[in-house]
Figure 1 (cartoon, rainbow, N blue to C red):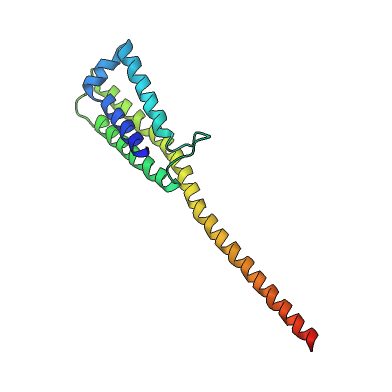
Figure 2 (figure 1 turned 180 degrees about the horizontal axis):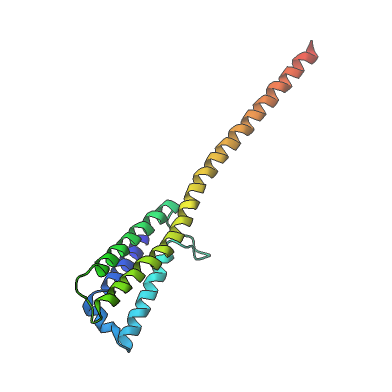
Length: 161
């Protein structure tokens, strides 16, 4: 499911930015509304793979979420670079408007991804620490039990003599 969500969302973004599709959805009317609803649905499907929607759980591990977001973010940055450094406009707007739009695509978009990516990375790193803590706790409890048994046996030997 995460791979399907990833491909549909990123494919939908690239399709929405194709000049012919952009021109068709730029004006008011049902094509624009349909395009916005489709992007919203794809975005929900994409982000539901990263952010748990109770009672459902995410299918991706924390590391999987980091990779998922990193690759998706990289693809959006590539699109932003293509639009921002174009020598001629792809759309029926002034070139400077296209470049500003590319900046908006890159900066706020990367901030959103960075926040969620940082949380997922923090949770993933915390999982490793928890397993180490559990291992340390179990080994220290086992050591204490062993010491208690040895100490108890030592007291019993002293009582016997």
